[in-house]
Figure 1 (tube, rainbow, N blue to C red):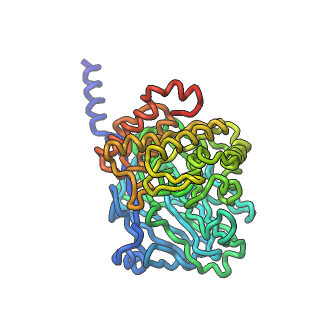
Figure 2 (figure 1 turned 90 degrees about the vertical axis):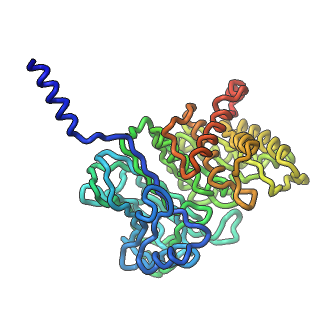
Figure 3 (figure 1 turned 180 degrees about the vertical axis):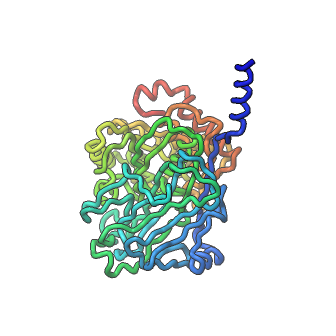
Length: 468
C-alpha cells in the first residue's frame, strides 16, 4: 500500500511539471525589390523594420543602436554613418523558451562604398549579458586583436570578375542558457575593429551606407528550436552565384537540416554571374577557404559552363575548377567536394557557336558536362538539374519572371537535393517548409528523394562517383 501511495504521489507531482514538447518557429524579413511607403517610414522614423512572414511576422523587428547610425529608406533599408559599437539589433518580443533551446539567425549585408565599417561581431543576450559564440569567431589579419563574426568588402569596378560590392549572407546558431518566459529574445551585429572596409581608420570618414539585402536576397531570418536535439554538426562552404544566393538557399538548406536534427555551420560566398575561376582570387572567397576545417564544399559554376564544356572542350573550364578544388583541399583535406548540376531555362544561352533552342538538349549537355567536370576533381554531383526536370514535368512553378533564376519553390527543391546528398535519408514529417506552400513542399521533397535516393541508376552512379 505504501508503494502504491508513493507511486500515485509521484504521478501527481509529475503532472504539475511543465511538459516541454517539440516546437519550432520560423520568421523572415523578405523585403521586395522596393520597400513600400509604410516600411520605409517605419524604418526611418520609428527605427523598426518588421518581419514580413512567419510566426513573429509584424512583431519581430530590426532596429539600429548607437550614436552614429542613421536609418535610410527609399528603395531598400540601409544605415549610414555606422561607428564602432553601433549595432544592427534583432528583437523577437514576448518569447517563451526553455533553457537549452536553439536559435538560428541569418542576415544579408553589403557596403555601398569603402567608408563603411568592415568587421561585425555577432552577439545574443542571455543570462543578463551580451554573449558571442567564441568557437565561431575569426581574427582579422589586417586589424590585429580584432575578433569578428563576419565582414563586408567593397571592390574597385573594372577588375576581371569583380563587382562594386559583395552582399554577404551571414548565418549563426547559438543556444540560450537561461529559460525565457514572455521576454524579448535579442541578438545583434555590433561594429568592431579599427578600420573601414577600405583599410582606413574607422572613426574617420565612414559615412557611407551599410545596406540590408532585399529583392532576390533574404533580408533577415530567425528560427527557434525547442527539444530538437543536435544529432551532428557539419561545416559547409558554399561557393557560387545567383543560382545560389536567390532566396538565400544556403539558409534554406540550414533550416531544412536543423528541422531534422542536424546543425550546419555555413560560410557562403556568392556573386552574380561569377565563374568558379573568379573565386580562385576574390578576397572573401579566398579568406573563407583559408579558414579551413570544412566537411563539405558545394561548388556552383556559371550557369552555362558545364554545357559549354560539352560544346567547346575548353580546357580552362576544368583547369579553373581543379584550381579552386585544390585550394579548398589544401586547407580542408577531409572535405568532400560537391559539384552542383544546375537547371536549364528558357532564356536560352549560347555555348561556343551553338545556341540552345530546347530544354531537353540543354539539360542533357549540362548533365553530361557536370559529370565529366565532377570526375576531374573527384567530386560528387548534386543532381539538381534532374530534380528540376521532373518537377517541371509535373507543372510546378520553379522560376521567376525572367525564366532563368529560381523562385522559392526552385530554391527549396535545390536545397532538398543537397540535403539528401549530405545525409542520405528521407526528410521526415518535421521537415521545414521554408515558406513554400505545404503541399508543394511535400511533393518537392518527394521528387528530390526519387532523384537522389530511389533512382534505379543510383548504384551505378554512386560507383562512378557522380552521386546521382
